[in-house]
Length: 107
Image 1 (cartoon, rainbow, N blue to C red):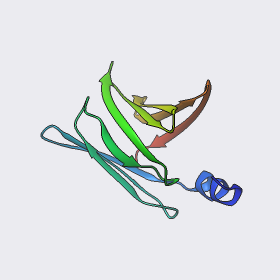
Image 2: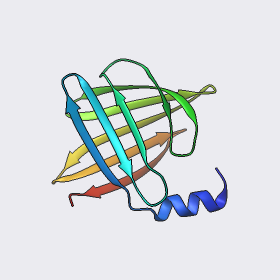
Image 3: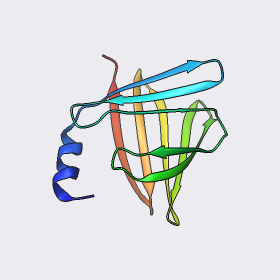
Image 4: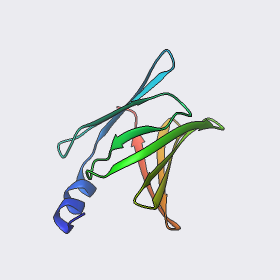
């Protein structure tokens, strides 16, 4: 990802919407930078295009009240954990031992 794209994405304040319809979970991210939407069933691998346009294979499971997503592409892997903490959604992204954390507050 280029420097300018990283800077713009880092300043974006996305709205994250997680909804459930039967056994299908949908995660929508809406921002001035880019909108994304992924629908999936827990435990089933699905194809996903990330906000930075990577084509990945993702699997999401529920683990101790957290949604844990594993993205695999080109021999690489990223783990994203989404959990509620004090009425805030905390997103932790881990790759190669480096963790990035983003906190979403309820609108």
